[in-house]
Image (cartoon, rainbow, N blue to C red):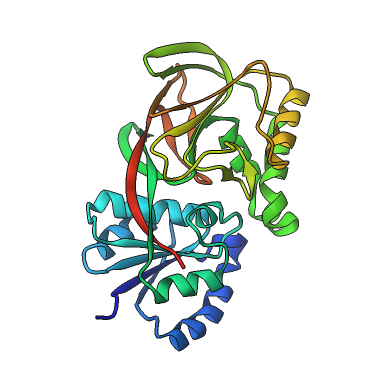
Amino acid sequence: MPKQIGFIINPAAAAGRCPARWAELQNQFHKDGIQGQSRFTAHPGDAVRFAQDMARECDVVVAVGGDGTLFEVASGLLLSGATNTALGVVPLGTGNDAARQCGISDTAQARLALRGSRTKIVDAIRIRCQVDGASVLRYALLFGAVGISGEALKKTTPLVKRVFGPRLAYPVGALRAIWTYRAPQMRVTCDGQTWENRFLLVCASNGEMAGGGMRLAPGARIDDGVLDLNVCEAIGRWATVALLWQACGARRMSHPKLRYFTTRTVAVEADLPLEIAADGELIGHTPALLEVVPQALRVLIP
């Protein structure tokens, strides 16, 4: 029996270049016999709602866009409770780190995956945080972070993406953030131990890469049942630039004020609300609880 497929397309992905690339791909999909209903997002959160709706009637729900699109579609599938619905990926965004770590590095591999039935079971990060004073639940595939990561995302504007491209856009955004960011006071609790200090970054990773290929957590695997946590206290600008250089060069970040270890949960609190970044999106504010969900999703792979 043919698979029932639903496509969720983010027109804003890849700094607005996604619709043209999607139009070209549709002809190729038709030749492959891959067809299904399509819905286009217009606002943040649309893909979450669309995925929840499609999960009730589709065998596969496909995220067409970048890491942020995949984040919302994965959240929608997991929030729906439809355990039999698989996640499909067509990487048409800027970074596409989540797609690569799920086994799909380009659109040719996406076509192969959608034609077949092979799946990879991956973990997710369950993130409970605050939005407009209410508690919300989201699921990330790559990372959840508090600290300079949020400022870096805001500095990685559509113009920066267009000018610098997928490999350099996020490092450039991070560099721009370093010169203005001031590490805030936080309380970080992990494995029953609490640290209170000014922290530059608290980042729980589910896989190695984020930000267009930066290796924030070398050795991390998206299916190992744990989170790889970076906790970095406040350090100077040039020391922060050195950490960024290490991440861009695929080396493990190293500094006397940086802790790196595995965990299953991490809680972050602050006297003033701090933004939560997840998979290239700003999703809410502290207080936040991040937990690994082992074997959370089935992803179609070539």
